Every structure is written in structure tokens, then in C-alpha cells.
Length: 283
Image 1 (cartoon, rainbow, N blue to C red):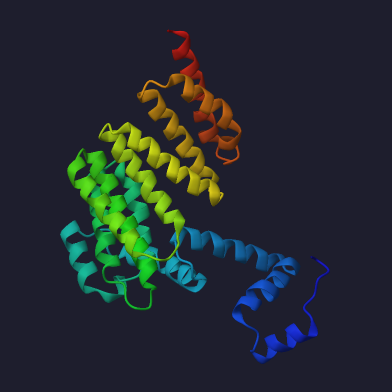
Image 2: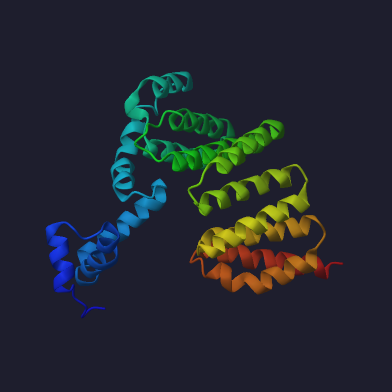
């Protein structure tokens, strides 16, 4: 690959502006990335930001990813009612990147301050409902699904299981209307919904949701998310009294958990196996 060069025909088409965009991505960009380490670094950063911002368009991801902290700074110190008003009235705040940042902050806050997690998810919902036509309607529907799922997750932690259920019904309705094919969003909603089913003690359903989400994460090589779900499945198996199955799953999956590259996740997997083996030995 390092010795590959663009053909005269490809180069001529590119210079004249007639080379198809897909061909630019397939032929021209890889050529630059192979031969320029700085471009490789910048491309890797763009991919990271795209994942963080959650948008398929690199320009939107990079631009709005940079703008989002500045937009949040205009809201952060205001009381919640004022934040709601600002999000309703200020068109500058109707941005994809800000919505994604609010969702990240909601998930971070949920376990330490679930009330704040609910507020941030509600703010994200206000933003996503006002996103303009510049954004693809199916991707907006996916983002709405994530907003409802994060809202439901924060309500679950608060113990408001009925309103959490309602939020997940709305999340799944949004997914049903979307034709984006974004399976990672579906996996995340299934993952969060499985936690609600655990809280409701509907453990068979929780297992089924974990398995569906895990299959998607494995298919997309989302190693960290897959590792977390394996450990969630272990906990559910323990709760339904399937200790032997939990031990077998951990023994079979430690290498997969290790492949996530997260040392804490690997340590937690081994800690769980030791705990299960100790528990089994006590019977």
C-alpha cells in the first residue's frame, strides 16, 4: 500500500472535479493517509470526534463538537428553569453537538445526582425537538431515541420505574420511525432498557435485552461495551440463581473482556469470577 499511487486517470478526474465522492474517499484519502503521518493523526482525531458527537458527517461532527462546550458554558451556571427558557428561545443552542454533550453529561450525572441527570436529558430533548432541516430526519429520530432512553435511565435510578417505562416506550417509537440503520443506537437503548427490566425484577426479559444488545456490539466490534454487557449478564444470571452458568460465562469471556483494553473492566471480570467461585464453594 505504501508504494501505491493514484493512476493518471484518477488524478486527472480529481483535479478536474469529476471524481465521484465515494472514489475520493476510497482512492485519494487513503493515499494521503498512508504517506502523511500528520494527516493520519488528524484523521484519527476526526474519527474520535465523530464517535463522541455521534454524527455520520465529519464536518458537522468536528464543527459542532468544538462549539458544544462554548454553548454549554452559556447555560451551565443558570438555574434549570432559565436553562429551559434559553434552549427554547436561543436558536444558536439548537445544535446537534450541544444535544450530544447534554446526553453525555446526563449519563455522567445519573448515578451521583439522578435528578440532575433527568434535567440534562430533558434539556437534550428540548434541543433535539428544535433541530432544523440541515440535519437528516432519521438521524434526528435516532438522537431523540437516545434522549428518551437517557431520561428513562435517570428516572430508573431515581426509582421512578413507571415514568422510566414511559420514556423507553417513546425511545422505541422513535427507533421504529427511523430508517438510518444505525444499530449502535439500538444497542444502547436495549442496554439501558435491560437495566430497567432488572430494576422491575423482570429478569428473563433483561437477559433477552442484554443478549440482543451484546450481539450488536460484537458485530460492530464495540469491545468495551460488549465487555460491560457480559458482566451485566453475569449479574443477572446470579440473580436468577444460575451461578454455574455465570461462572462458565466468565471463564469463557475473560479474554474477550481483556480485549477491550480497559484494565478496570478486566479486573472487575476477575473479581466477579473469584466471587462466584467463592460463593459456589460455600454451598
